[in-house]
Image 1: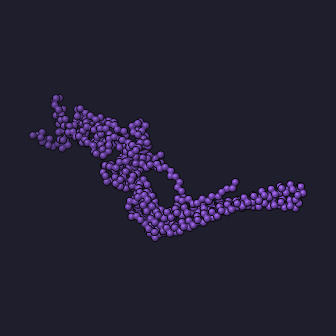
Image 2 (image 1 turned 90 degrees about the vertical axis):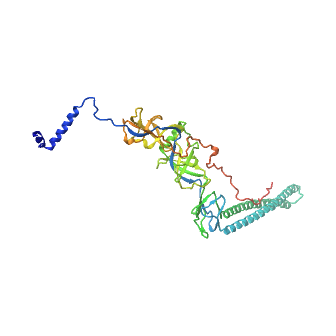
Image 3 (image 1 turned 120 degrees about the vertical axis):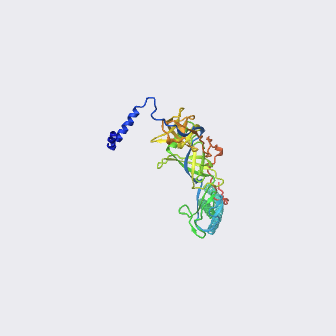
Length: 477
């Protein structure tokens, strides 16, 4: 009783310290074979094994649709817009009549040029007839000159025989000089007449050129569609005076072609270098020489890429401002589903065909600059494994290094375990999504290409369909 009273009078801190010391002494007195702490039970997780399938990596870029042809419809001649013959936004075919400029002033110019050709032709014929007349005069003058020479020769013989007087001889000598002078004058007239023929031919050619220009301007009054495509809105209404020519001409409307259609996109520098390296190693054909397939999807088509085309252009240099390489694909567009200006998702081959190890992206952990996964060994113990990642393929991540196809890894419950933990759980089979992309790369044959064909140089067309009557002048021998 006295001890209890003394214990009750002690401070509370002393009592608590005594209890702790007692418990510690009791623990030290435990026998060696007894277990102090119970072992933790295995942690329940969901695990899986990676997929190993043959694949082709498809690199994705952001592209934009562009028309293969874009034409601004402008007037080539000036005049009042007489009529329009198209509906805004409709499909027009090459050669369809779009607009008509008042043709009356140009008809007048054609008639004037035609009259000028007739006048030049008449002058040419007159000059040719003059040439024929003067040539006859030349022949007559030559005959008279020859006769005068012969008479002078006979007179020179007779004057030595005193058969004719000296006066007659002088007359004959004067007649020779006169005939020679007359012959020179007639020949000069002949040269002048031939020059007039040449001038008439030049005037005729000038009149022909004027007629061809007038007819061409008259043809330009009918503005026709140069390509097949969709026409834009009308920028000028009927009755307005529009300006033609090469500079400051009036814009009437625009036309864009729709089938086929281009898709332009930019590849970063590392991707471009990767393609070059794959080409050197023979794993993938060069984008410049092989028409690789291209798969395109629009913004409202989810993960699908239903539009298939092929590469047809790689630029010759990287853009210094963005460090990217411009590439272009061409796509068929028979149904006109693709509209120029739309943004697209573009997939092109990024590797050759090979077997890859795939796991879900959410099973990968991040530790500063390292990526790791938790692998389950034969003793159901967790091991931390650093891996090297590739791109996504159909919703799964490609594992380039660090994991083989037969190993098990923690799929769900990564936050509840750590390296060295013992786990148990159930297995879940992983599956790939369907993005409609093939697991092989088949280049498009050249004979099935839809790229623009190289145009040959057109022969120069004649300015006029009918040639005028030629001026033929006979040349005297």
